Every structure is written in C-alpha cells, then in structure tokens.
Image (cartoon, rainbow, N blue to C red):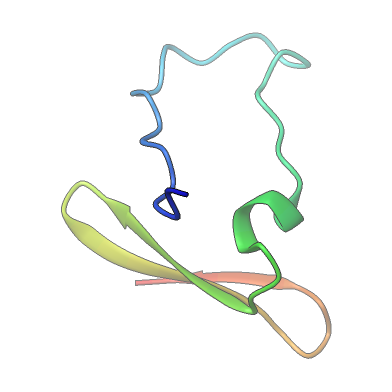
Length: 58
C-alpha cells in the first residue's frame, strides 16, 4: 500500500465564490496534530492548537 500522498495538481485560476474546492481538516491531518506541507520548495507546518484552531507556520 502506498502511504505517500498523491501530488496535488497546480492551482487553476480562482473559481467563483461557492465553487472553491473543499476538504475537511481530517483529510489533511489524518489523525495527526501536525503535518508538513511543501510549497514552492519551502516547508510549512500546519498544526492544531489546544483550542482546536489551525496555525500554518513557515
């Protein structure tokens, strides 16, 4: 079984309001409190706080 996430296709022009892609945080975090996101060669961390808020840091 492949545990690597599938690559996300490049973003297209901004769709009209209401047509934006939506994913639940559960899909992104997969049960973890922190995930690494790579974008344009930079590493970002997305984490859940004690107050159940999301924070994205570089």
